[in-house]
Amino acid sequence: MKRIRPFDTRQLEAFDMLCRTGSFTKTAKNLFLTQSAVSHSMKNLEEEAGCQLFRKQGKKVTLTEAGDRLLDFVRPFLDEMGKVRNELDGFEKFGTGRIRLGASAQACRFLLPSIIKEFNETQSICRFEIECADTPGCLNLLIDGKIDLAITLSPMNVAGVEFVPCFNDELRMVVPPSHPWAKAGKINFEQTKNENFILYNRTSYTFRILNDYLNKSGVHLTSSMEISSPEASKELIKVGIGIGILADWVVEEDVNKGELVSLQLGKKKLARTWGISVKKGRTLNKAERMFINIAEESGCHWMLNKKL
Image (tube, rainbow, N blue to C red; front, side):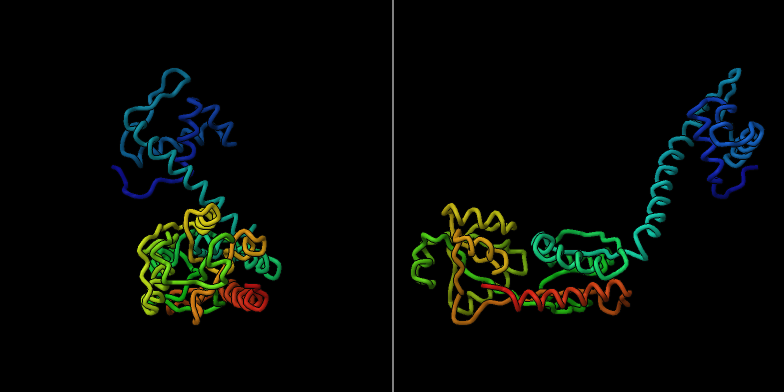
């Protein structure tokens, strides 16, 4: 009578090898077993399955229909088990743990490299798994438990998230050097109707921050293009497609080269706060706490040394 319990992994490995070689002798040789041990193992596997899995044709072995069905299950299962074994082995090779981190494309390019570099120089090696998403996407991943930490803008009324501020940046008007505002050194918002604005996507936190700021200033943009890539925005501005509003650190190099001009939006600066978001109530391990500390220190260092 068939016994309902999980299949023995060693039997499945022998079954897979037997299917590959078609020979009990070759299977025994490849697995460093005796032929009788392989035969006994396959007999037990058939008893567990409750049906015949093989047909013997002389010295060769072929599969029954039931054997074919079992093989369809066995090979993906053994492949996945091998991947898990390699991953578990990696925990010993790469350190005591991992950090699943969320960050926007901007943060991955401009902020993350220096933080991870310093982290690896001062701590035991830790494995990073990075999900690239904007602030709303990172917060959703964080709440769902799919990441451990996220580099985000300060969350807006998001329950279940704690935020550690690291640094502030400033959103500024960015124009080509030939633009009249660049020559005047200031913005004339009465002329905005004549301008095509290249802005962050309206689903982003940055668009909401910018929209609130402009509305309070009585400014309403009539023509705009939304784009998620600051790099693409800069190139469009350089060739005169439009003007944009970008973070100071995004355009610092371009401004220093004289390729773009950055202007303060108004008498009151438009600042954003960046930091590390964590799921509320979650206990952080040593590596995560150290990552946050380094992020705070890096943020302070950047603010003290920024040129715009």
